[in-house]
Length: 293
Image 1 (cartoon, one colour):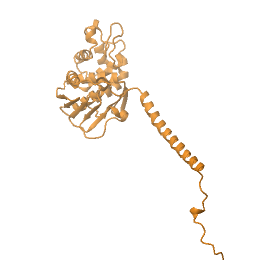
Image 2 (cartoon, helix red, strand yellow):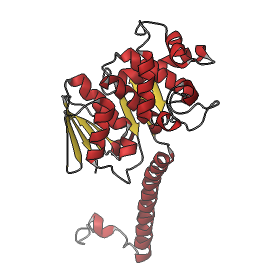
Image 3 (cartoon, one colour):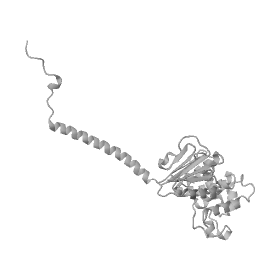
Image 4 (cartoon, one colour):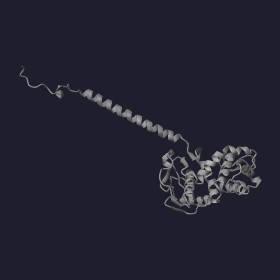
């Protein structure tokens, strides 16, 4: 039997690691970490780039129908619907007006058209709709359209093509029917009958309108005069929840023009920085806040 002492422990039996091997392992680990960082950065970078390349867009949903419009169209549509609310007209009036505007101008305030046609509804100075300057004022043009519409008894239930043709005297009367779906979804949402039906994906705001300006426009267009402006925020107390949604959707629809960053109705919020996420969950109320900073 050998009188030698106990053998070396496992750790002691390993060959010493050379400095070169240690450096190689450290270099390999560092390279792996760099690669992982690049993959992560690339993934987020691609997402950010994709988001930056997407055009601003508004989505409107009601009764299982979804339509998309650009912010300019949506802002004009909100004005047309708001004036119907101010005049206490049925939502059918807004549907007819929005359908007509879509057919005539794609809901754009055009400074040109067939012969002397101009504006959202392509109204003609020579046909008694007003001066060119008046027709290019969306508020005047929309009120002129409604003034003509309400003269036709039974327009609330009549065929949209027949009614629009009576008002517009178009050379293509059947074309109105093609856009009734867009008119219905816009009217239902923008007059407050379809809660949380409108959301917009917009670029970051670079300028902000004064709350007093938005307050004045809301009064002129929708007839709501209960707004209070202070510290970059407009607070509106609506008559009921439907009117509150009409105000909230109006503010989102015109967010690009005013530089709106957030719109809240009770505990539900549309946040400009949230992209396509839309309205948060929560309980709505009759109080709407519009943030402009």
